[in-house]
Length: 354
Ligand code: SF4
Ligand code: SF4
Image (cartoon, rainbow, N blue to C red; front, side, top):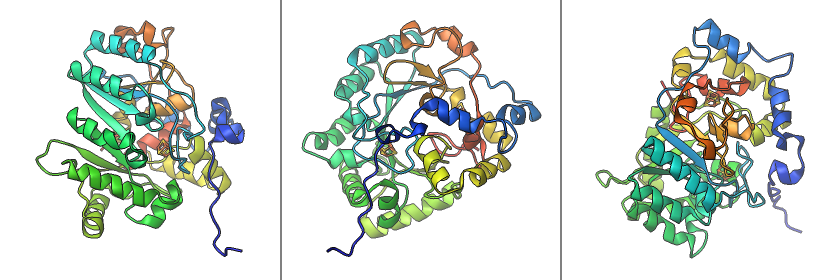
């Protein structure tokens, strides 16, 4: 009998039939009568920041599906190989119509693993024709997972795609603990492929940014300091180069909420977030200039609200009914989870906000 204890492969909350797979149950928990800390809306009012209103729309963040080759412990999407929700080409066409109407300059493709959407390349090509800057949130492992996906780095280079890739630590142990066995080595392999193409190299114009999120129930450390550590360790240990490191705070939703509850750390984590409220960070939350769209074409203030099924305020909530004026005049839907964006140095899909 083997003496090694193999960690059980994680499944999505949906597959496990967890009560947290229902967005409303998460909201009930977060917004229950006896709250941990002041209500987020009250906190905004204290600082004269209520209600949250959008600035001009700059980024469309399109979630092209919840399927992923990984099942990371902290995933706020509850993504995984068992998720089948995938955006169709018809929905992408509706998004392109809205982009043409507004002239959005940046589209941020996320998932799941966005590369797993069968129309991924077609969508990128259509965006490129429109001179839209494309960001892809890649988990790296998908880029070296098989012969087909190994063609993607070259394709991304051809289209000048900016890559924002998750790598929650520069050590194998920490990455594999959070993302699954073998993930670190495959991520390093993918980073080498990207570096060879010029990604992350100074002067190449091919941006490769890495994303850190804490493994435990704490706020991220100083972004610049950690970026220096990453640069030294990845260069010395693996010869890897990259542009910037983005530190992201885990929001208390989905699988991270499940993790907090299982570790009996939910209340203390909420206290940490609430006590670290920073009004400057609240002024710069990403929902002000970004609109999130789900695989079915529904619109949200951000990817987190998407996971909580909190669609944009107003009657026109589907991209087929996109109305720029209404989107700009809406108020942003908020809740206790928003404290994750306003704690300390702030957190967004582009890292800290202050
Ligand atoms: S790679 Fe990203 S989307 Fe996939 S399970 Fe991990 S955190 Fe979720
Ligand atoms: S969770 Fe979403 S809606 Fe709330 S502050 Fe963050 S970006 Fe804005």
